[in-house]
Amino acid sequence: MTPQQLTDRVREICLRFPESAERVSHGAPGFFVRKQFVMLWPHGHHGRDEPHLWAAAAAGVQDEVVGADPERFFVPPYVGGRGWIGMRLDGDVDWSEVAEVCEDAYRHIAPERLVRGL
Image 1: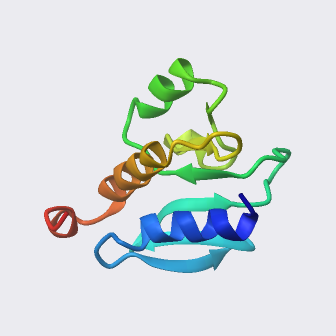
Image 2: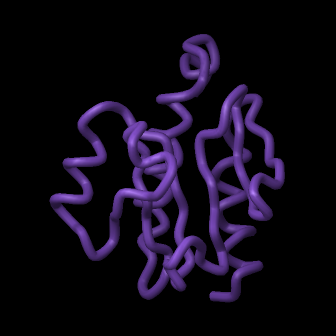
């Protein structure tokens, strides 16, 4: 999958959420609902060559997913201290899992009135 195809696929997932928007952040696509909930690095970033995303996550999720599948999930720089998760998007990507990670991130960041609309 090309970086553009990857970006289009993640964009399709993230922009379906109520009042979500895309903005370039740090030179890459970021998805926001008031605050950022997903950051996409289609060309890799910060020492990681593979395409990946960073997503906001509720308390405890980071330890759970990184512990369960450290080949797919990782603690991202900068935002990892706030519980965000990193997810590799190379190889055989499970797009239903990507959608679930993005929805969980949205639910964690979005105001309750928007979450009720899902």
